[in-house]
Length: 278
Image (cartoon, rainbow, N blue to C red; front, side):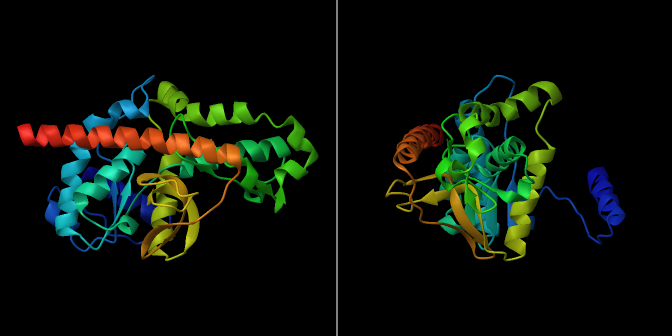
């Protein structure tokens, strides 16, 4: 209750009139447009996101079932890590359509890489367009072939020769751990990224952002899992965009998909065992 009052004050300070309430009843999911799921065990310093998979699946599964029962017309935005696996868990246990369930995925990773590229080329961040696809984790895949500055492919710019690509990607991978180590949790970056995605849905903006979504054959016929890909986001939900990428990127993406697919399959098998024995 105290937090809802504090948030109401914050909105008022920005000239936004809003009624913020709280509840512990799943029945209050009914009528929701977007439900953001953040429940789960937080990642600790030095812990890989995938280490949380089974533990957080046991938290997310019943929530997804409740959403499917009380708000079957809503859109689920999954934040809980490992986000690609938890997106698959939410999709499976909610019984909802793939377009209705997606995860934060590599949206924030793409923004982090965008900042590093802008600094290297000494341009405004809005001039940089880049994407990271694949796992939100160690096997993420930067699409250098699709990266542009001011509409110009970066490989056509002289400063590209000095671009420390590997170093940049490693920094993106380790940024979350660095913040957790020094501040205890990542807050502002994910918070703004989540707000952007919710606004994109509610505003029916039809933007293409890189999020965790269920793919079939959109990327070189690689798929059958939830993972970070470019997707069109609107009031109707999230639809992956068909793309073609270069050979090395394609191989790296395939490896990332296979990794996440294997972890997801393992989690589902263990969840079935736990539920049948319980």
